[in-house]
Image (cartoon, rainbow, N blue to C red; front, side, top):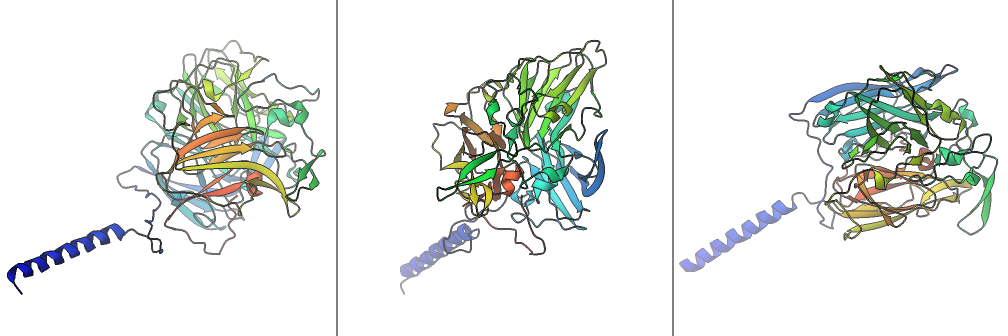
Length: 542
């Protein structure tokens, strides 16, 4: 062989080897399937160099006094309702051990907290539920400040009803500037749980569920998402036709919430709740969390600002005045702030169900000589008037989206059982919403439920921007949420970035609805599975 040919062969060999090496590097993270598509993994929770807060949450039965007349055998985390509050600073990490001392499997979902899919706490999706007598440890970093909460996601419709939830606060630097910081958890209880029929109920707004004995309702027309049609107040004995898939109709009883006859703030009625202490001039922060199944209309009779929605900040919050009702739907959180005026007042619920009178708490100013009175004429806080718009926003309706998905929320009779459905299907038969990492996703919620119920839709692992309501653009500050209450006849458009790979739930947070079908899986293409059921426990993700 001539010398020049030898060098050509050698050079060609090096070229082939280099190409093969590059190909190997590109393919080392590829999936084993024949498509050759690159797999994506759940983000890693790296605790290295972080302050790690370690604690134990023990699920156990405890006697809990709701009111002077009612003590219940509650299911609790660490013996209280709500369970122990977890407070950490932004950038810190947690290592939380769940110990199960009740007679059913449990899990913990960290509602709203951006974390790895591996830590989401969903039985049958990300882990097995924790059996009685066993424990399970969660580890994650808290990079996004806000007001969150935690609760069991195993048979949640019953376990939350019994009190298995708590709050989780990730403090920002600004939180140090508040003189007082209180968390107020809203919930409903049944003094006689056996009265609940059909194993569930429709998500309702207090105002449309029941009128008072005279048939009156508060004059709150125009509130965000509130429906004041008193002729839609149905009792359990009233009936309505629901057409089945063949077009015929089946008479069935309407669900309602009438058996929930005790409303509480922080697990107590107003008779035994301790007053919130402030002093004139204090900058006060209140964090409202709805852990129940009814949307509550809360009146704070001082001038306040809504600073955060579902833990996410509002740009330049507007003054709301003293006559605005703040509606907090199941799963939602609202942070407000006000400056103490030197007067005492009461935060109360303006719903018309009889139990609404229980849902109030006093605010006592150490210099308070007068008590503010409540106005009978109120209007509601709306998304449009929360704060000021900004020049930049993650999404707009003019964007080109990689995935657009419409979600019709409805009811149907299937096998002689009422189901809450997404696009005519009930979980687990609802097809997954599939995306690729990096996709811009738009979802349209349409509530066409035949029973006029509301659906607080919760997306795990992501925040979405609310773009429009009933075809009208949301004005003012951008609204970022993880839970959105979609009421009968309403349509919302929301958008989010698919930036957290995993298998995530997208479901109604009236868990009566979720447990009867209104659930879907939001799934990343080519996601590298990390969980396999052991078959040792019956996982029930709702």
